[in-house]
Length: 468
Image (cartoon, rainbow, N blue to C red; front, side, top):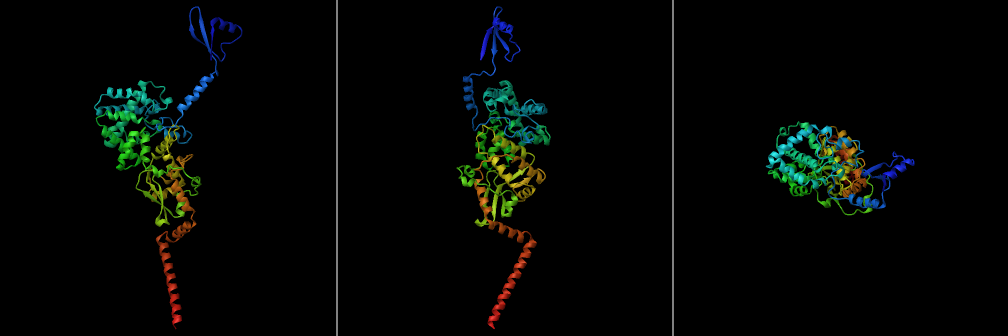
């Protein structure tokens, strides 16, 4: 609400004892030599009409969709490894961390890589820049408004132009050219690769797509991205059709990685509604407890995280938990943490496939012994360090996660039903006692042989007695 008063009225108020140092400060909005108008803004006096308008604006802003904004990590900011897992180590891409002193050293690298990329496109630098500049309104929409509002269209276009060209050149060099081509040491290259999959460091895939479309080496660049993502996700080249569809629909590189990891037929996730009785508590915990009831671990050839299955040999014993292979190294924690943070974005409607996988794996891993069993089974390859470190990574990531109860539902129910059969525990204990090593097997067979001989001798003696 505004009050407009003249200079005369203003002075008369001052004479009456009103102080100009009050909370409501006068603001001069218009004036002449003979007349001056003063507007006083009263705080806390928003009209009802403006308040109701905010309700409508919030309705438009807060909504789920398949095109979530690139934003700062929100839901996991209290995690003790937030900064370690979410902030870039070497290079900033996009507006969120742009200009921070910690990343100034790599700005020259980005310019060098961008220039090298432009030289291979067959276009001039001005032509490529104009392509980005002409679409800057559209590209701006990929980011949370708070992250781009301080940048003009021209500044944001230049930033995305350099970052997009540098990213494509880096990926192409890593896949096809010697490392010397990027003029970085091995450790720097590893850190940059990790930085490319941070949620706060993402570039719109449309930006990369537009730059590739305007390069004479478009097909080669697309193959480089495909191989780069495959290397990060350990994917096979056999799913080329699915991968191409995902490329076209990708929001950014992190989204593309998530799609590749979860490229599995939809029915395997079991999207139908779950009866209440099937959502019961599952009492089994870790790999050690599964072994006690005779459940064995087997690796699947599939490289899709969603393909976890439980079967029973001879439809009875033993139970077999089939899981995809996973490699754990220094990038595993940051990559999966950012994938989980991406799924938790408030505007991203998804099935929490990565979150559910990490939650399931964390339920199997309580201590280093569980990691050892997963390694022995060929499911987990440990390039991180000790088994204790691996257990710690998954235990920390699995804290406070809310998985999709439908994903892996059938596997959990089947394991629980098997777990509840006491006879399986007895069989497993018997086999473990008598067949856990060659010596116990020999001892068991010897005892069994003696028992058989004793029975035969007894039967022979009885038959001989009646024949007399």
